Length: 488
Image 1 (spheres, one colour):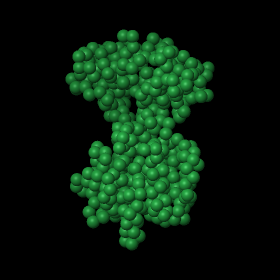
Image 2 (spheres, rainbow, N blue to C red; image 1 turned 180 degrees about the vertical axis):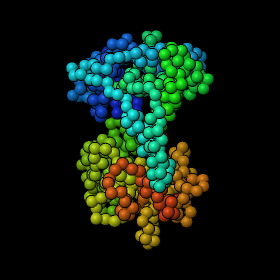
Image 3 (cartoon, rainbow, N blue to C red; image 1 turned 120 degrees about the vertical axis):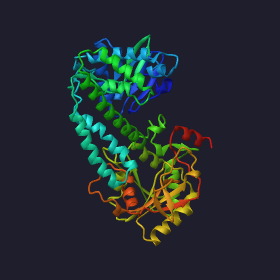
Image 4 (cartoon, rainbow, N blue to C red; image 1 turned 135 degrees about the horizontal axis):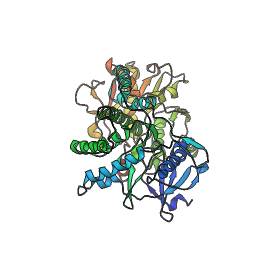
């Protein structure tokens, strides 16, 4: 393979893959260090099945599995999404062509294929457990961000019961080849033909799933009239379908899929840092540099000025880079890295895991997403004084949203007499610094959960406290803000 510097990096997706274009070979290099079994080996195996059934899909040119990449043929840049966004094109005609491709996919009977390691791969069943676990992403990632702890617990119980009820009402058996991400951004227009990409998640499932994925795609706004026409065309081309049963399955699976999507995109934003792709593909967010100084270094410099003697750093994504960074800097403070482990623990679980073995009772927690400076020193010391003098168990540093550099940020809370609430217009943003007592982390088992669970519980008790910062607030939210901050 050519040096990556000589290849053109192209836009990625929601997975842990990177894509590079090799113009000389008319090929795409797919790199995947995480989940490479699915993203490389299984991806090629599914493509083999599609190609065998005369469906245009990426063909393997070469593989170097040991070094985490495969090379596949390049279908160019034009997706069906782009074509459908053009108002001059007849959308219904295009969707009819897509339905014909879907019909071909659903006729596939092959379940077994040899992968490029010459081992047999069997396409698994898209059973109710997988559907349930996917849908549960909504209550695991999205619900805790908007509900208090008590309401979140109640919601999760009801949510899971309702999902199980919906799954029990599905009519069609899991015997149809299902792409699982069949939408217009995963369909390429190449040499006047439609090519199917991103098929690594394919399973044998309910035949209504891919149609629901296509018609009720959240990425492309289409009028209900067009959705109905496309649905009817599918039924017309599949006359043996029991319309009443199929429509019920279609509606159930559409709801489940869109709940999953909400959960996935919240997880991407919170856990995986995808809002800063592609720059965070190779560098964790705290090590990104503004004016040649990383976010983490700015944070550590402030902590030193505060007179703090020891720092614990919670890591998960690209964790090895943190120890390399610390060795290169030689900070004059005791710093220890605490890893989440095999699975990410989110903000609540991560903090609990980080402090669990410490004899200290009170901790000051920093989020390095904020551009910290010594200008915050006096305010944080005053917040600390208030915390101990009034014998509090928590206090958050807040700023009025008018002080935020990123004007897209909405308020998190209200603040009155240092007591936080959410009762009216939310004018204040949490800017990434809090002092908290260890005893508020009451979970017996360290697991994935958000610090919002603790905050929301304190809000219910009217015991969540805040201190107002008067400083302009700079927060690294997305790629656009990153570019603007670099130009300041």
